[in-house]
Length: 347
Ligand SMILES: Nc1ncnc2c1ncn2[C@@H]1O[C@H](COP(=O)(O)OP(=O)(O)O)[C@@H](O)[C@H]1O
Ligand SMILES: [Mg+2]
Image (cartoon, rainbow, N blue to C red):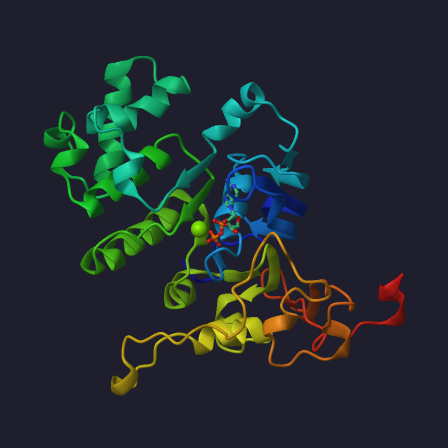
């Protein structure tokens, strides 16, 4: 999915100051708290690109991906899709847009209704969206899409049930169902994490090919930095609900600037046979708690490079440009080391 020729540099999705907060109670009758899952994110997804969302578990990747598709309600901020503000739309107004923005989740076993045949599962969105005149036409379109995702010839599969299929086949069917309505945006949340190692690369290759053929824009959520490096044009690194670094994957994942991005990369298992397969902990220190986000820079309690302005009474660093370049090539980092605070930041 790398390469710059397809990208036209215009934003397909524009997110500004997005917050998704979940009110919760801890334990039975417990104290009220608020999980700040997404806590002030602004970014653009450029048409034709693959934007990776990376970061430790709990950093808000899934919630951001779901909020982008209006599968979870934002608490504040806005999401524009294809130039239109979709933040305030109700479900009826969203319905015609749903065909243009589709999710693919991690678990293909949970995604498919065990009581629905494969043909009907892929034909269903066409009928719901009235993109096919009748069931026969919808099934014919479904069969064509199944063949594009490698379920070929599709005929013998149409009347089978998901239980007959492998995880890799199921995820191909999930992809067919997502793509059959002709989306421009696909948000894929750890799409191969539950598949056997042996089929992961095949499914990712398939996704890359479909992106080229169909002119898709991908948001790829992954905790696997090697996958991100391989498949993403740009990556956004998330920490406790914020983007702390964003830029071209080949820059951010080879010359990381934010101390958190560096720590993430340091934790990747080495090729060194003695250490093979053993990922090191990302960082010492407390496991971050999204109900109690530290003041100042939210990363400062775990940051090896924290200095005075970062501390609990310091300033929460905003994303700032560290290397300006053309569309999609700019690197931005939210860190006082790279963008020292100025007195006016205190106001
Ligand atoms: N529906 C929910 N209710 C309460 N807390 C949630 C909900 N969904 C996610 N969270 C919390 O929000 C934070 C971010 O979660 P998530 O978006 O799943 O992160 P990631 O995908 O990076 O692992 C976590 O602390 C998680 O426990
Ligand atoms: Mg997740």
